[in-house]
Image 1 (cartoon, rainbow, N blue to C red):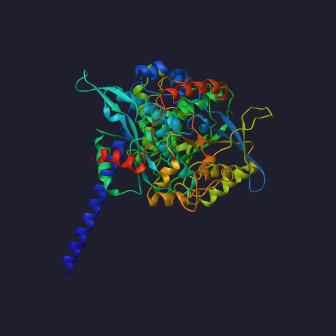
Image 2: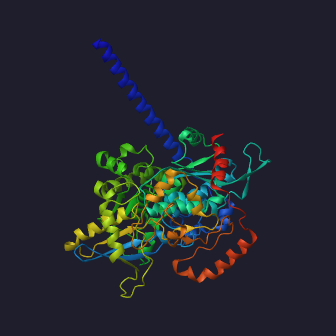
Image 3: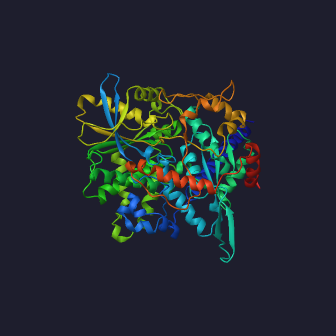
Length: 583
């Protein structure tokens, strides 16, 4: 009897272990498959005609040959995100000064934040694949949680480039070039899970709802789960749909972030930024942004002889996800080269970006042949990952420590332009310190500044500002009606999300007499126009206001020619389009 029980136990253990190993292997293979779904591609002739990549992209300015080998769209971003100076009071009422790379202002017309650089190559590569004859790239699926910035950015900029459910792109059939295929291009949205209830997160979902007339299907975690196997099948096949990696972390996305660091080096050389920045603090979610900054920092050291960072320069990555933070504390998940086969780790993302650069660059670009090794060495000595559970808190929301830091900034903080040694500095747009990302980098920065105050000697720390300064809202669709038509799970998540910032008061309730006016003051009516094929000129931050009149005239003429016709009810809209993916 004892031997039989032992045999049964052994079989159960062996079966469970096998299932875990097989399931884990399948999950890794699927992640790798999705991370490679976008790939790389050359620019189309239309891109080269409409864009000025070597003029407006730091990566191409430094390595000109890449502009002919790597697709890129400006997405109407300004030519360089500005450097500002932040000020905040410490717990002891002492002044804390820090610098800010204002990625949040990279687009003040559509949507800012770090996702713009992520998508400049990524969507352009998808456009190139589509024009080359692969119709699957007409159907892009953006994946994230309810408060995902990546989902918002992909929806807006995808529609800008023509994935707007109204425009039919003519694609050459790969099997017979004489047969054109007309495909209505769409962005589809998959909110795979909730994050912490927070009004900032709900606003992101509402932004997507407001642009939903020109989307494909919208799937969320409150709907039936039976479609998940079908979704996994299509994510693997990639014959009808192209799934885009969470957070935009793919090689094309990482290369976009490389430009951000090269741009910073240019600003240092042009004295638009101090040359002695010792640390850059950046939130780490999918690891796309920090990976690009690492590769960029190594390229600056090797290829910018007239620009150097201090010897003790560090990139401080600040975890936003408690589970990944736990893995970083236990096994060095993000940076240990043992895990460089696994997408979403820094080591993997850096490795793939280095190999792409070496593959694409011409000999005259002088990209170091040992770039990957140099980056690994940089990670060991110049990258510090913060993973304290007390700071990271829940995914998508504040921990007590980050909430205190955000409230401190809201109460005592200010942002001014960087003007070198000049005393008079113009006040600038305040930071949107969300609990999801920004606060988890701002809190360590302020804590380190306060700790170093007795011996600071003017140390200069920088915040890489990733949250957009504007929350876009379109007139396409009434986002409030969309939310009211959602399932009970989504409505409860939205209702539980409270406003955390005193600078952004608002509320939301789908019951108890709540209306859209309770939160709409936090959203910016979008100047966004879908499907524009003429590239609007890239402007500097100072030139935006000067061109406002001209842009408004262009916008008015376009709207007069192409008015949006109707808004369908949400349930009919989703049920009709979602059936297409499960067939």
